[in-house]
Image (tube, rainbow, N blue to C red):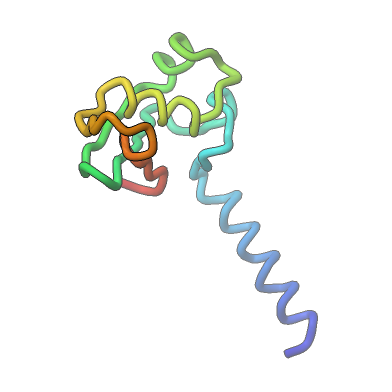
Length: 96
């Protein structure tokens, strides 16, 4: 395939990501467009949500969504085995 084809595909994917308004785990709270943030656990299938204003008040505007999601799940985790490697929830930041 010609290089122009691949460049067009990659440019289109970048444009779609920017237009969708979705947040990524590395994004800071102050950069996120959503007012309600959700994170789910791949281990226990729980869903935790928090309003962006509350998350910013508790963790600061510059906190990353990944950090906040980990804390939200870990604070309410029900899977405690006693082993550090196995304890806690496994966050999934995709659409819930």
